[in-house]
Length: 274
Picture 1: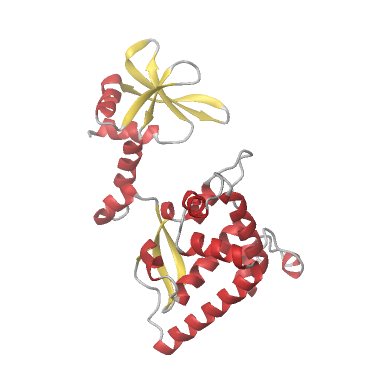
Picture 2 (picture 1 turned 180 degrees about the vertical axis):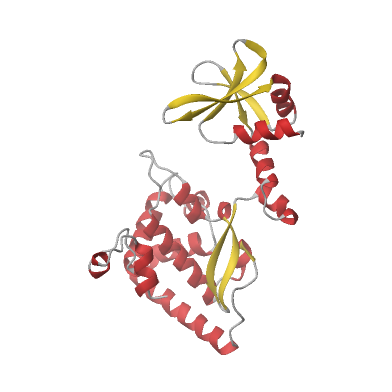
């Protein structure tokens, strides 16, 4: 792609942005962006530039709600933009095909910065997915409860394949001794036992599949022969009960609230069980 094609593709991927043929000049494409409820001009490109993106399968024309044809990026176009925006050139192909982020987790050797593939995590998918009311399918407390369970499953060494999701980055501290690693594993298994006892056997098996084996909702429904779209309801119940066991709430209460703490994160860091 040349410079103009890259600029147009980048604009198409921005939210509240539309591209359509100029009604007064059929050889040009206008870019409009919605700001504060008002559509304003954001640029002009030659129609040949737009057609070049279409030929490369990076964009396509589709019928807009107003009846006007609009230019939108294709899946390949969005992947190409992720590749161009990759912070590490040697990992550009990985960024192109995966939604990657960076997180810090507890491992057997201590805190470690890792690269996370959000697309592979059913928990991340549930948190990003919206219901009919525009709310996430699981709230933040349920998400963090599931992530805590997933971390304990990994630390406990119960699932050899569970670390396939993580691409390790340089650690922030030196490795722990073998004795400390064994203690971490034993402690993680004890926490898992307490959690599974608290939520019950049926929910335990379900969350082991979801948070441990990273099975998606469709796979869970298929293996359990559940009706379509029923897994999300049961998963929400299971994660809600798990969050109650961990003491994770959507907002701080009691003494924590009086100190100005309003979110569960501060409570967990200050007085969590991990």
